[in-house]
Image (tube, rainbow, N blue to C red; front, side, top):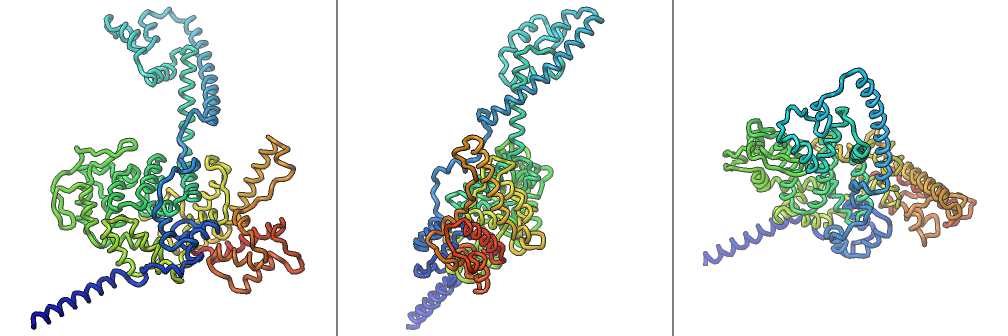
Amino acid sequence: MRRGVGGLLVAALFVLFLSASAGAEDPAGLAPVPADKWDAVKAAHLLKRAGFGGLPQEVLRLASMSPEQAVSSMVDWDRPREPESLIFPRFDPSEERHRMQLKRYEQRFLRSMRKQRARRLTLDLAQALSQPVPTASERTQRKGLGIPANLLPGMFRRVLVDRFAPRLTKRQKLSMLYNKSRRGLPLTPAEMQTVARGQALAAVRRRYESGKLTRLFNWWIGRMIESRRPLEEKMVLFWHGHFATSYATVRNGEHMKLQNDLFRQQALGNFEQLVRSIARDPAMLRYLDGNRNKKRKPNENFARELLELFTIGIGNYTEKDIREAARAFTGWSYRGNRFVMDSRNHDDGQKTFMGQTGNWSGDDIVRIILGQPKTARFIVRKLCKFFLAESPDPAIVKALAWTFRDSNYELRPVLRRLLLSQAFYRAQSIGTQIKSPVQLVIGTVRTLGLDLGEAQDLTRSGYRHVDRALRQMGQHLFHPPNVKGWDGGRVWINSQTMLVRYNMVRDLIAQGESRSRRAWQQQRRKAPKKAGRRPPPFQLKLIEALSGLESPEQLIRHLTGVLLQRRLPPVREAQLRAILAPEGEQFEVESKRTRERLRKVIILITSMPEYQLS
């Protein structure tokens, strides 16, 4: 009987322990949001935090779904073929603009070589009149490879000069012609044409490569604006700040593009695989001197940042762990755009890392780090700080860390649970996070429906204005301030950045009007009748989507709801109404004057402090 009672008591205590543990791992804030509480405000909040905002019709589309369907549409994206505008442009000499540049460069190089040839012929003629006739050996030296005949055995002379040269590759022949040209040896007209064409192609390619980072910036901004998977691009931005790498050190646009693609491919994949991939990334190897990490002289830069910033955080490792981890990553380098393992410079000796001894490699170091529970909490805390709040609830972080570890460090289950939770949609979370410069600019472009123009126009498109605005506001993409990335939060707001943030929308609209007018002027030169005598009025898609709203009060409440996710006090609404519909005037929604006033009201709303919050 006592045994039975004792067994019941043990069972009861065990059940209580499990329930307490479940309560600790699943706080009330992580319970899914009820379907009857789902509305347009929460849908807009999801679109802004898990993406970059959107037009009212996009918000209504999410609001018409259930919470599970809305979150699934953000998290469980498929991979359809992207529009042509989202495919990164590669160098193609057959493009018309490159063909024109090639022709100009080729003519320029030909003119230069002809002038040099004429000058050289004049000098040769003057020298010939004052010098004896050249010997056979000197004539052979001027021919073909430029090797003196007396240095070649007679039996090999004909083979090298007459038979070997025709078997050279096109690139080798071009290199020979370059050498002849540089050494002042005469070229035939056909050879000059070949050299000029090769030099022109190299010049056009160098010019294209010099603008690769600008093209990469424009391409990524375009993806953030137009992509059908906004959470994917938001996670690319998160990983760009987490695994911070700066072009100022890397100095290779192709490597930065490969890293950006890596973040996109594994945006919501497995974190362990992402860490292993970033340890092999050429941009990261160059940025943190991984390619200089040799067996005889280990470099600790990457090992230190791997522990301190990328995985487990400060205070959870020792200096010896850093040294042993650096030994494990010796010999990791790159050649061109590919990772290479230099076994001669790799330390394959015994290493003791975090209490475990063995012949560890870099992958083993990553595995041991992810075996520590504090790693999951460190990453989840950064995710919550990015998506939820500046100071996330420790209970929520702990529960999501359990989800992270139980799913073997898969990111998608963590984001799904967070974006579906009641904590994500409560009043304390909506409109309380300071927008980062990228969130502010991209969200404005998407919400207003602005067109930034042609991404390949590196001088006159709206992308250049966006680049300048992001620099002034302190978030220059591909140029994080240090390996820690951007701190975010209140750091975004200071006396230098506030003026830029307040005037940003006005400047974007002014840029759009200027581009619209230039497009009309170009069309007028080509087809005057179709273009018309006056430029068409510049319209925002947000204003075009206001059909069905008739009164000034409805328009103002709708705009404040879309842009601010809240209603303004009656006094401020009255001030906006006085601008939109002054007393004594008849209000007409479709009139040109009302459209212009609506733009002014939008600029005023986006200049309010509330617009700086998400």
